[in-house]
Image (cartoon, rainbow, N blue to C red; front, side, top):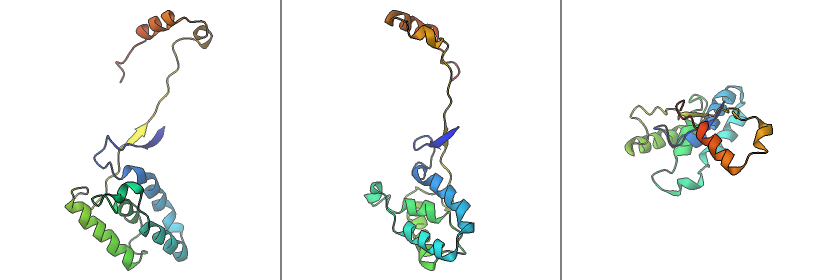
Length: 142
């Protein structure tokens, strides 16, 4: 089950918080009217997350989101802003020279059942728990 995107395991750590939104935009934009698309574009152009107050990062969210939009349907202002952010983040080495934004690595979670039946766990002492932890301490699969 995919539960999000890693901000630390992939090279593109700055795109992780916005990647699901980017994917959503790519799916819905073909179905948007021009009026809705203009409204969406305006929201993106005015969006600066708190962590982007640092000058080196300012505009990265807009870069990730604007890049998801159909360039034939966005305004000249949005195109200029996208190009501005591409130049900035290529120069800052936060974006490849091609300008292509790579997806961050996805995070997956799995659950494993307890090897100890639930009825037994209710009656276990601390000492029995410690023995069980040592007995079932298998990290070979990870």
